[in-house]
Image 1 (cartoon, rainbow, N blue to C red):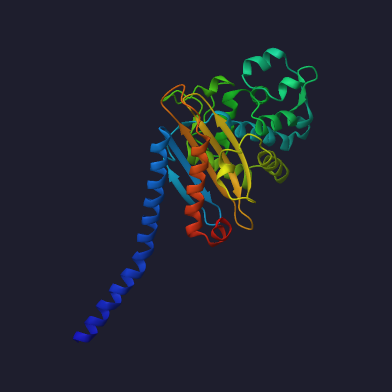
Image 2: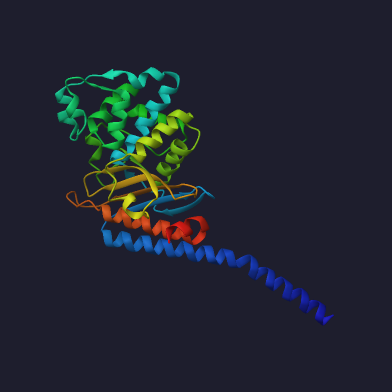
Amino acid sequence: MFFSSFTRCLAYTITFIIICIPFVSNAQQLTSIQTKLAKLEAASGGRLGVYAINTANNTPIKYRADELFPFCSTGKVMVVSAILKESEKSPAILHKKITYKQNDVDKSGFAPITKQHVNNGMTVAELCESALDYSDNTAMNLLLKIIGGPQAATSYARTIHDNKFRLDRWESDLNTAIPGDTRDTTTPAAMANSLQHLVLGSVLALPQREQLQTWMKNNTTGDTKIRAGVPKGWIVGDKTGNGEYGTTNDIGIIWPPKCSPIVIAIYLTQNKKDAVKREDVIASATRIVLAELANTDQCIKQNYL
């Protein structure tokens, strides 16, 4: 009788330990990465938001992921995606020539591509490419006019079940990034989930989805941000954003060799209007996230080390 009770008690104890060990391990990992991101945030002098998804198992990494951040030019992904969605039923829209004036260029604040074509205009596809690959503000404003203005971009976000993204203003007013201002904001979690749906999911038809991927992979403005935090040979498609108060953002998809893609959104904003931008913080946050994912995903681990 004694030995029977002892055996049952021992079995229950072993079972309890086996079941609990994974939960303890996961809790320790969560605490570890939260601590690392908190230290990075403290060193930056700003407020950091991170959301990453390993699409191999949809495991998320979160840090202030549900807080609002000014998205600045990362919002151009939503506007271009709205154009691509429209092109599914009206393919000719991408080939439509759009003309504009020098005043449109001057008031946008940043127009590295559109300023070269004031005399002859640009196609909608060329404007999309300029907005994503060169962060051209005039291109963004012209695309907004096509879809019906900032509210139309917000409405499009709602159609893909993003209830946080809100675009209120045009370029370059949307980059004021005033602390506490909810205009032109989103959360890291909302933006990462939307990016996953747009770039990897079925929200866009295959030709439009592949075009969005190509444009993002060809981005020229992100070499010091997410791209600086990934190992050599990994493919990145991203969209950066900068604003006042030292706001420094980057969102993207990371393709490790022969592994499932990783979706990541990193936002940083500060309290001083003239604070310097911190691309290094975005790169460091990326490294922290990838190192954590390498601990739990063998494919990523093999490529990361």
